[in-house]
Length: 231
Image 1 (spheres, one colour):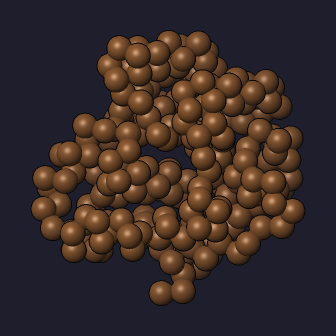
Image 2: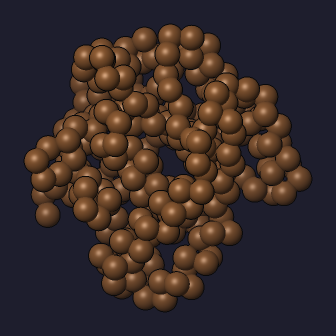
């Protein structure tokens, strides 16, 4: 399969259709679940789709080991290429790397001025303008509400969409209860629920819609790819 056909058939098109075009510049979105359910896999598959469409992606990591992020991209891309029998897969992957930037900050990485300064350097001096920013490895607590306002400001300043991963604490109730204090800052909220043979994606918030459509997508825990559950 050629790249253009892969893009057209990607399950990410279903997500964008359900969200009436997608998250959009200047907005924040979040994948929320228990630890180890598949948030990073979802984010990387989402980012890979953007890269295949020639859109630049910035991945910001606050994890202890940033090296595993690059491995995630390689693994997810190889699964996508194999699933769709992508022609010239190795050459295309090399092209994608030119549009992907990974930045690592310390675990407590609440210093958004450092993130902003780095973006200024890469965007204004290097011409790297990301269409999507992924923020991985953050731990949401009450004090993060003011910080999320800063992320909103940053998203608007750089005219980009920002996606987060949020891990439910062990003692937390439902995802809806956990994310409620932060609800106003996110335009899109997607919950991941582990099932016996797959991981269900459930839409908890879709912009200003009063009710959310059913998100007909799932994550395959073996391939780590998002797929259309009707297929």
